[in-house]
Length: 182
Image (cartoon, rainbow, N blue to C red):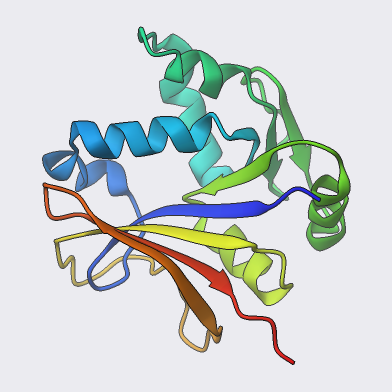
């Protein structure tokens, strides 16, 4: 069974909204390698509409020697949206309803990991339905004070830390798996 991997950039105060506005001052080669390796262990993206639109406006025109842009552009992308009518970025499919059922069907297909980047509302839906297999939180040494938080007020989860790793720029990777209740 495939795993749904939530991979997020979050501030120290839990904000995950618009990371393109605050992460770049902390990016480094070792974070780039982590993101590269992560992308190449996945064979699909699951995205909310807003993240999809940000990615679709940025990635199709990008090129790089490491093949990251080609991988981003060629992977199948499943976009959860009730408002999007067309998804024109290569290999994109819209999921309009029955999100939990559709994601469970994707998980049951053969393949590699399914990455969920950004897409905070989608992550909250997946969390409520017990569909997340792992959280990879790149926590940035910045406090933003406001913005959409990864875990909404009232969210509850019991997580087990499986890795903590610090990068030279002060960013910390925290990998968690949901604990199975007995």
